Image (cartoon, rainbow, N blue to C red; front, side, top):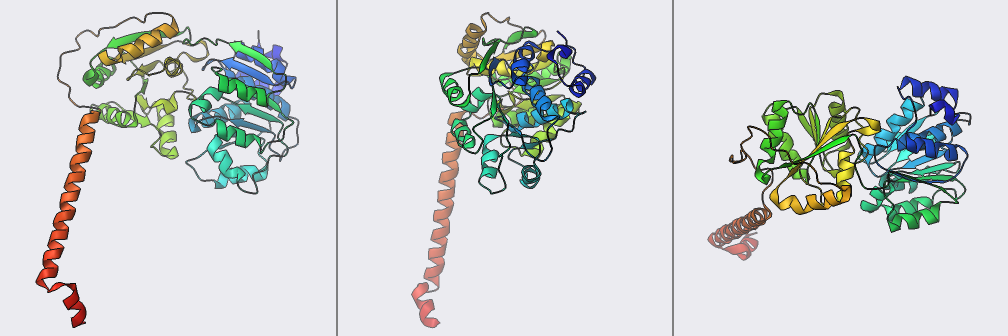
Length: 427
């Protein structure tokens, strides 16, 4: 089925053609027609299925002929990275239209975002927290809103955003079209859809928790303390041209990126402790090829759309099988192919078994030729918890000893001068 069969505006078809898209994905085939007809849509679709265009194209079609100067569409999404990616996709698809868009998220100044509200930018793409920050101010009104999109709704549930979503709904016109997209449909999400949607068209594309068919998955058994050395070996051997690497903690992401840079690998990291400018620069540099490796925590597991990404590496096994699916879904997007490698230490085998049960198969094990699995680790990426606690207690004891010594010196000085009462009498 070509895109022309969806009866889209000629300017949209022109943009789609110039972007190199030949035919719509299944979620686009199912979701675009009812959305164009003004129906509410409840869509369950896996990450990487092309769902962003499934809601952006109907919105653009609706707004092309509308007067400018009023915000008519709002997209709510869980992370800054996903908001920035959706804005990029909107601008690409709208390149031959007059439709405007802006992003609303934290970590950057509110001035340009306030201007987007005041000027009536056609489409706003927002994260919940920053959107509520604006709604507390008098200029942030959306009386002309016609379309609301909730994207990655289950991720917003995971991040604790559902109370914020309900608060946001109180600021929006009740008569609107709502497009609701989620990779899974747990009960709290279904309860939210019952409150938000009117007689929706329900779509289920690839709902089962499994990676895309184009992903080649493999497991690399390795001791925890040798994971960094294995990662470096695979890069130096040329087994990976570039890689998006997921770690369990922000600390491990920092240490792994430093370890790779120290050994001549261009690497950056992205996680919640980095500023928005740093996160944007890291992602842009990775997309442009400035960095060969981007080390990330799960903040980047959804919403990062990197064209032709060849490799995803689970440096640490995710605790939840669904997180595994979203992580590896960063590769093999839109029917492409890619590799997903998972480093598994002995203590992570139980988590791996849960993932294998979820995806319905045993993942192949790989042993790297010439890699010394008995080597002494060159560096530790993370101090064990017991050692961290001991270090904290030691520091507290040292601080207390210094404070007591300082107090003793002060008391001795006071005694040598005759004490504070003598000084007051001399004054």
